[in-house]
Length: 94
Image (cartoon, rainbow, N blue to C red; front, side):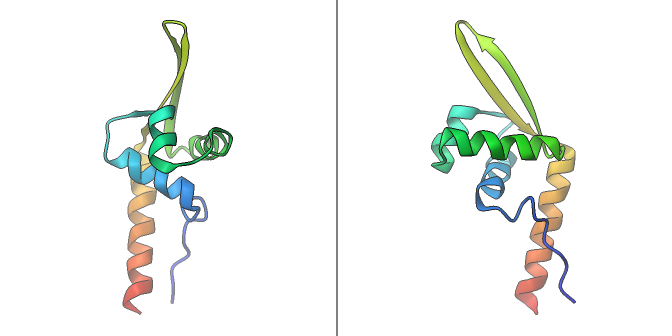
């Protein structure tokens, strides 16, 4: 039987964000937008969904005169990603 894939991570952009955050300690919004090629509006929505699920932590602050948004993956996010990858591997093996 096939395991259910996490619908939150099955979105291409959300999967890209989580994958990117796995490889860095934290990343700011501009960096994530540049690496994923997403529009600012779409990325904002997807980051909010990941944050609401507890997969990432989001910090918003003013740096000098510029607002910044910094994201960091959580333990929950890492576990969800690992589970998602294992489920995909099961699909490939069958």
